[in-house]
Image 1 (cartoon, helix red, strand yellow):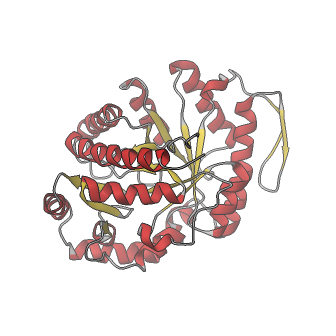
Image 2 (cartoon, helix red, strand yellow):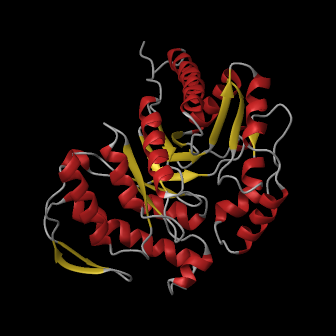
Amino acid sequence: MEHEPAPRIQVFSTCPASTGSNRETYVARVVKVAQWSERAGCKGILVYTDNSLVDAWLVSQLIIQHTETLCPLVAVQPVYMHPYTVAKLVATLGFLYCRRLYLNMVAGGFKNDLHALNDPTPHDQRYERLVEYTMVIKQLLIGTGPVTFDGRFYKVDKLKMVPPLSPDLLPGFTLSGSSEAGLAAAKATGAIAIHYPKPASEYVGARPDPTMESGIRMGIISRPLEHEAWDAAHAYFPEDRRGQLAHQLAMKVSDSSWHKQLSEMDAGHAQSPYWLIPFQNYKTACPYLVGSYERVAQELWAYVSLGYRTFILDVPPNAEELDHTQQAFNRALELLKCQSSSTIG
């Protein structure tokens, strides 16, 4: 009698944004969050990009220099640079630091940012462009020979990557899977489709596509006892009328599918760990799970049982919060082991 192995999951944290920070405090904050994340066992750390933030590649280099194994998950926007430049940066950082990267392929963002860059490309076409962009990057980094690519958006002729990237440093790719166009792009490129999830109970009969890898983006606030977790959650994210108005304004300048989907959901339900108040008050960009270690672990177990294997957490406020989150994940892994040991292979 053989048993199915427990599913393997990977957890990423998120780097703080540079908005509202001065140089000294921001650099110190990035280094601290990266080191907390590594100590907590995170695979990597998401580094945002948009017109209002410092360059994600330079922040990623800072993270690499102050950690041992943490993999930056660098947000990559096609409007900002040619795919060759992305591949060159990945290969160069691999050459200099022998560190694997992940690339979070971003199709768009705020419409005002895109218009400022003279990019009027419609939503679904941006994902078509992103597929070509990603394929050029992948082909350059695989390094089997000069790359010739003749697409609608990108064309290269006998282009070669020097220095070549070591095969064991080939990057992983993530891509938003909240729209049909995003899911199609993730499938075409082999990227992990990242969802902004609904409560796990609402996925009955609606599992992610089993032919592709899937993950979710969420924050977690957990404690040994339920009331301790909710007390901490309300302390971190009190109701904020100005934040609610800012959220409504952001809705008007974004054509993001996940943004609209979350905005149309209820803030939360009694007895459920699923909580949207931080998102609705414009304090963060993802839903949260709040509750005791056991309750949050049950919800995490439910997501993994549905087929989600990658978790991208919100920016941790301190090292202790990551330790609490690690406790919830450890309990979820125990549930998965128990499930696997009771299943006949």
